[in-house]
Length: 64
Image 1: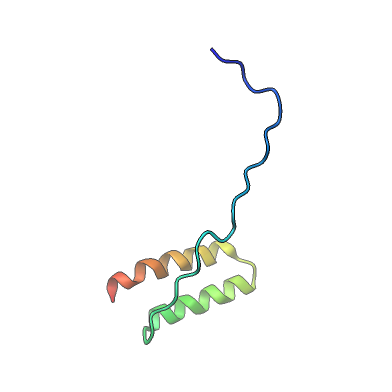
Image 2: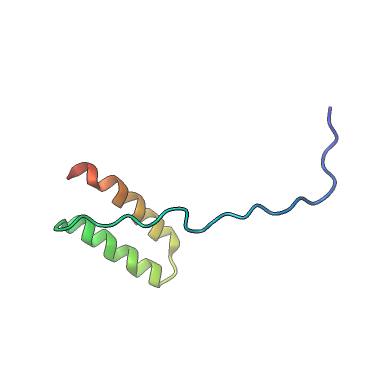
């Protein structure tokens, strides 16, 4: 059995913006609305909703 580490290790740094936000498809009301919700959420500091909108925008083109 190995001994546990008894000293601090350096913190892992993760980027907040791993990928660029997906762009809405032109002339699609659903994409336009998701993009608008994402923009309002970002302005209000609600990054959970921003992430949710990005996921939905990435999945939405499957219906186009």
